[in-house]
Image 1: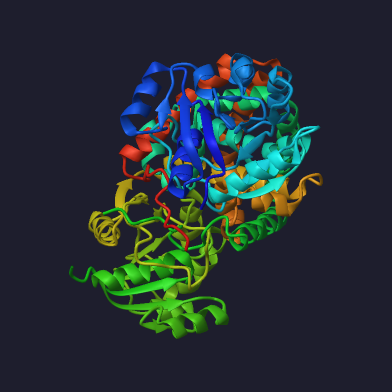
Image 2: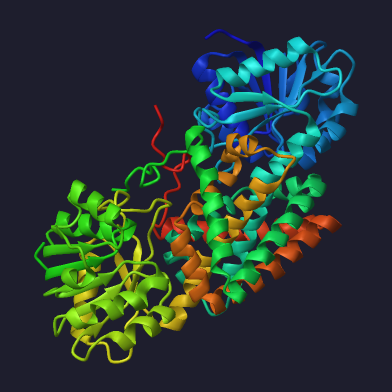
Length: 305
Length: 305
């Protein structure tokens, strides 16, 4: 493939940024990629493992001359970073981000960007429970969706170019507005994470069942919750604080439904439970058909030696 | 390995029974394995794929002369099956089961068993979201726990022999009493399943987010829920109806915690959220260390072509 941006700057060097770097390098999508992380330790690790062509000691230095600047910091830090880099941005550059919440990021970042800089928010819907500069890998985005959320006045050419980059990194892309994005993510990601965190917290807290029992017997359903609940605490704190309305709305629906099922258990209404469980099964089939997971009987896991 | 039981009868031919058959065959743990399923279609499939050495047309026929009879039917059907096979059981035989709930099964099955037959309930804590006679595979139990739940007066030699069978099928084993078993499973399996079912149901129900969006963007956390929520509806209905008390207790704790986190979101208490999410992370580490999951950055999934 050919170069899409001559110069790319990654601000924040965690799971998403490091995966972007390896994905861009693999396909030759960027000329030079600079990087910056607030923590010196992260910058040292990045230099040690060859993450970024050049690791800079300030965000402003990293964005200098960049055609694309991608903010890969927790949602709550986006505004401050935007303010910091704004004076150093090259005219005509595109600024994007990878935050899991879009309305709050647009409100925090947009006002800082100078005229002549294109703002194209984006959100790669992919991740693992790992974080930090060592956690990235080039395949992270493959076959996963990256949502592009153009703002009012986003330049069409700038949007198309960013979308081309994501596709070249292996992602599928869709465009939607920020409000809808935040609701969709509250359903498919934010509320599930909160619920998983809660369930793992309850298990940890129940005095009559030991942690060692919880850990030993996790294969029976709990294991998937712990994977979700091991995600980066700072990132997720910011997600819930900034996507408050949509998360609370979906949570409200969730507890309503949960109480209905709880009541069915208490009253012994087996038909209601059976019907409900039958309905949810079909959604899984849709996901298999859409290629978002495998239905191999061992979940496609590599066998451990 | 050598034969542990000369004759084994599997009653019910779903995921667990079919996996047991393949695991026993692979290691040569049983002489002849007979099988019975209530549905003629299931029996036909079993004959077609060579599941069981002999598929019988009645449960009584299948258990005749068997040294070990394993009830692999939904928990709610255990009592009726026990009543049906009781007259045909060989003196000295062991009757076991694989139900996810133990107190209710013991109460339903125990009274039907004649003197001189050993009852040793068990519960392999392994599964996939698939069900039916074609879903089994020999590796299902490997490195997963099977809980052995001896009843009052269980014969020690019979318990040890059953435990040896499970270990030879690749499982680790622990013994505990029925009450504790049911609470442990309410935490590690039953409540997580109910929550996953609920979340998937809510997603399906929210009018402003389409099913197709939910499916496309599921990689962001929701996918693991759909896998859990695709499990067999009949089996899970029975689990909740028969492990009512422990499930309702854990659900009560869960909603209490969820409301605390919901309140933190509403009031913007980022410290509470961050502390909570940090605590849950350590449980995940324990599970990796216990070998119950892999921490490969791509979750150990085989790449799709």
